[in-house]
Image 1 (cartoon, rainbow, N blue to C red):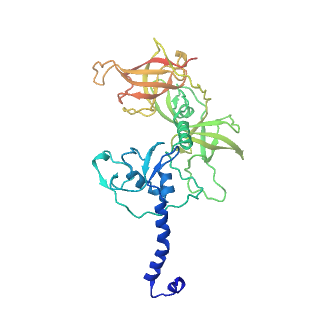
Image 2 (image 1 turned 135 degrees about the vertical axis):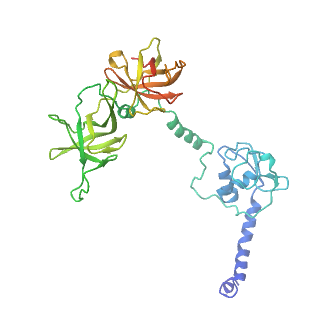
Length: 382
């Protein structure tokens, strides 16, 4: 009977009816076997219950809509809660959305039965538990988040040390020069202007009568404006490491980028960064008083993490990690200003008579050189 029906091309409706008649009894029998309620056990989720009883984990909102008086947040269900799996006239539901509205009690509707896929045995071994499930998987998630959140405190950071810059203080520094980008012989050089990105290989020339060694770290810099009698501003653009010597030329690889790197920029041997561990600055009284000299770029408005130079350094007892408070002493108009804290600075690196700081908090963006005084209020334990 069935075979002869499927051979008839002129009767597709009859084929569909017969095929449906073969499937529906099994589906109706499976739905009849589905319990009306289920008691939540440890580790259960709406996702898992929908997969087990409705045959599709993506139907978990249907179970939630039937149990809005029991489940406040669909991401969290608790052992011992009794959840309905089938609708009835006494069950309230919310509109067809995946998460509850701000005031679920104001939207009440009568749930209507609908055709659902038949329940099937859970033979899929793949774990489809949602991200916010309970049990061991939830604990693993929290441990993963702690790995990002609970980072050890570090008063000084290597990247800030090398990227903040400093003042030359009138010294004749051993500048080399970035000469170009290493280009394979098969590729023609179309321009004498080249730039460097992370891991780009470039060539450098040391200063007269100087040499580099493979493994040396070099700071790539440009020179900024003069700052009173404290020399010029040195602005880092990147950090490179000597990797090879080819035909008398030193080849470096760019390992950090702080700004645009171009051939012709200057290079210096990178100073050693001393890690201060995890110690925190301790408050002190009668700290050193300093004057704000300005920043890397001459602009009146500052923001957190901007670089600011002060006129006290190593000879004055200043050390990396020291904390300074900046107070305004006079207004641009010449009027006397209210003696209030407008910024907090942290010393990043120290020269003989100046220091480089970064702004760690700010209440007024107008930190103008010459109208601000800074006082040392804390320092790292020695």
